[in-house]
Length: 81
Image (tube, rainbow, N blue to C red; front, side, top):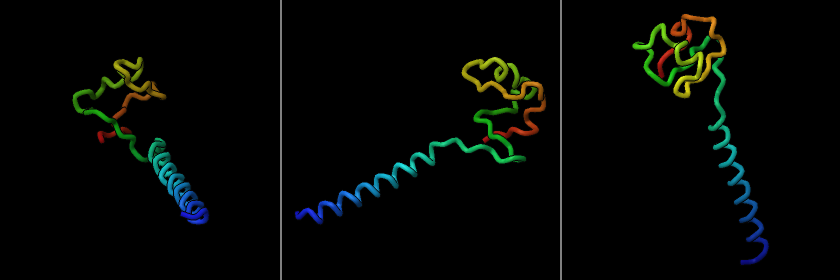
């Protein structure tokens, strides 16, 4: 294989690698919810209505700490996935 073909293959490989990396990186970024769109909850909320703050105030069992603990009507904005 001559140097010209090898150089071409290296460039194509680099372009492909950058493309694959950029897609993987874009998919790994958490998407911020848009204003007035519900935030999805990765667990059932029917049986836990009214008790969200029990886990989400103190990070019980790895729960995300609520950024707004003063709000009590969680299911008004948050929905099950």
